[in-house]
Amino acid sequence: MFKTPLNCNLEKCFLCRHTPPGFHPAIDLHHRNLSFKKGETVFREGDPVTGIYFVHTGTAKVHKQWTADKELIIRFAAGGAIMGHRGLGSKLVYSVSATAVEPLVVCFVELEFFRETLQTNSALCYQLMVLFAEELENAEQKMRDLAHMPVKGRVAQALLRLEEQFGTNALGAIDFRMAWTDLADFTAATYETVFRTVRLLMREGMISVTGKQITLLDRTRLAEVIANSVPAT
Image (cartoon, rainbow, N blue to C red; front, side):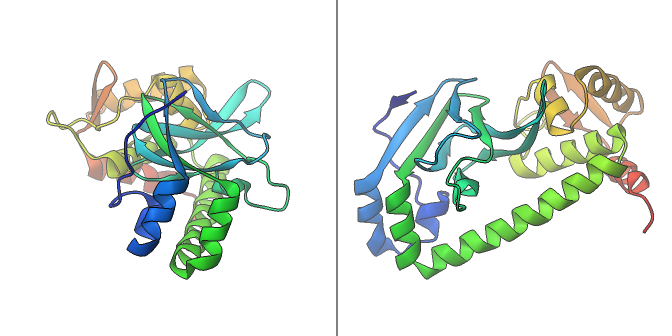
């Protein structure tokens, strides 16, 4: 990790988007831009909260220890996303970890300044509340999927969500190169099972894979895989 002179992206950053322009000089005064290499830890689950992070460039995986030798990726954070906010409870420890999956630059603000910003900016406070509600809903959905949805459905769902989040590149592939082990951790499956499932989706003509680039060829059928994987209620 090292400091970088890059400025924040006012259009994407969660903090800057939800605070009035008159507050931006204070943010500029109190923030630090930090760079992380691929694979470097931004913060670790169980560590005391020192501040909040906002993604400037690059992507980080937000993950939690699932078993003794397995982690679960909760989400991928990019494009101004906030990280570390789940540690704002009474214990003030990070409940998840964040690791750079590609060269990453983040904007860091210390905890005390972020608290003061929340107290003086109702719009930011409201948007953070909405974010917590959405994350809770997503977490409940993920737990249901892990309990009831087979791996094929979880992989199909993950690929559609990744394309929605990152878009596609000039070749039509998902604009995010992810390690197969990360896809396994994102779907809470073993590497071997995910690899077999990806090969199956390729044989069925739903996706194509070139190196680490994944192209979705038939989104309708992928959505049908997901729908058929959800148990009737």
